[in-house]
Image (cartoon, rainbow, N blue to C red; front, side, top):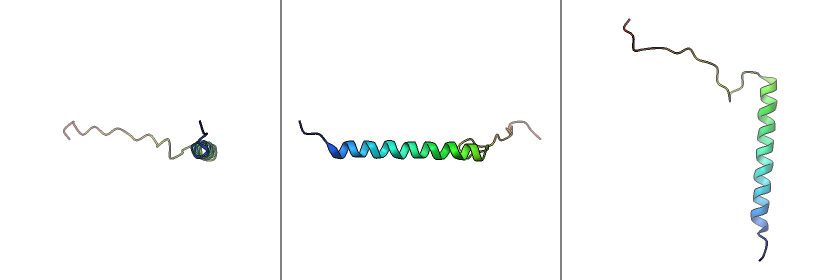
Length: 51
């Protein structure tokens, strides 16, 4: 059976891209503790009680 070099290359590229993205997110989290991946806690507004 012939090896599928195109598939192997695609898998390597995807792994490299994922690793790079993880590294970028980690750096962003260290630089800015309130990162966009963890949105700020919003107060819960209860609209069911009459005013």
